[in-house]
Structures are given as C-alpha cells and as structure tokens.
Image (cartoon, rainbow, N blue to C red; front, top):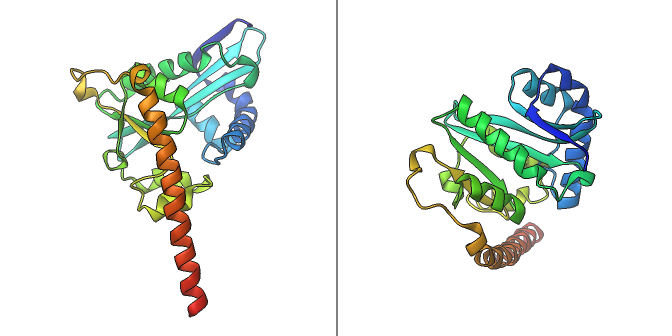
Amino acid sequence: MADITVQIASLEHKKYAEEICKEMEESAKVRGTGIAKRDPEYIRKKMEEGKAIIAVTNDGRFAGFCYIETWDHGKFVSNSGLIVVPEFRKFGLATKIKKKAFELTRQKYPNAKLFGLTTSAAVMKINSDLGYRPVTFAELTDDDDFWKGCQGCVNYEVLMSKNRKMCFCTGMLYDPHEKKQEKWDFIKKSAIWERWQNFKTKWLFKIFEKEKEKEQNTITIK
C-alpha cells in the first residue's frame, strides 16, 4: 500500500471535496442507505473550521475522510462520514482516521459526549476500542437537526414509525465522565450483537410491514 498521511484537513485539501462527496454517496449505496450524502461546500466548511480528518497518499491521492459535527450546543458530538476509498481498505486506515478524529474531538470538546449510529460490525469494533458502548437512542441527542440527517436513509420511515427510539442502526456513546467504567469488549460480545442485530432487523421489518398494511387498509375503507 502507498504511504498515507492521516492529518487534520486544511484549506489545501478543499480540492478533494467533490471527490469525498462522491465516495460518500457510492459508499452509502453499497450499504443500502443514503445518510452519508453531503454537499461539497459543507465538506469545505468543515475543512476551513479545522473539524475534519483526511488521509492522502504521498502522491496526492485522496484515501479517506471523517468530520466532526456538534449537537445540542456542543453537549453531543459525532464523528461523521467515515469513509475509506475501496483500494485502501483492509489496511487499518479506517481505524487510524477514526482515532485521529476522536483525538481531535476530545481536544475541541473535552466535556462533550461522543456518539454515533452504525450497522457496521467493523465500526462497532473501532468505536468499542475507543471507549464507546452500545446505548438506546434515548441516551443520544434529541437535537432535531441530527435526526433530520437520517432523511436520506431508506430506513427513515422505520425510524420515524418508532418515534426515533429504535431503528436498524446501533447507537454508541462515549461519555468522558464514565472513564472508570468497564470497557465494552466488542470481540467477546460480537456474536451476541450480531444475533440481536439479525433479530432486530427481522422484527422491525415485520412490525413496519404490519403497520403499513394496517394504514393501507384504513385508507381503502375510507
């Protein structure tokens, strides 16, 4: 693999904004969601604010990216849009980017709770190594602007049908005031999580389809 530098994005990296957005969109399509789609200008703004991490090869190729978003006036922070270009995957680059983003976030917002939503076992592993733990959605931000970001996801109707209390994603949280708590070991508990994820997916689909069918029948009767 080419030599890659993982660093805080700056003005010189704004030229990669469109490529980053395109990669986010393609990655979202592969995962079957639309959450990751962003506007290039938004990405450039994150770079200007020093709230993004970028990975670039020694010959100038874009390799990966992640950025910081704040919610509830800085009480909650998320490291969003984590992507790695396909040819640079499986070399631990995602872990390096996420770790750098985590460190930057802790510097900028030392008292904030870091959180995220994911359906990826790989991301769960990275997060757990950083000190995150799985939580219910009730422990995450109630900032409407955050949840509006889910509108591009194909599962948005499911989320809203559950009043934003549950969806196919797993919520994860890092609370700086819980440092003394036992670390959540994803390796030991991954099998349990996968079984729960499979059960939750089937259960949510079943409930959602029943609700849609009931709604359709009500409309037909009227």
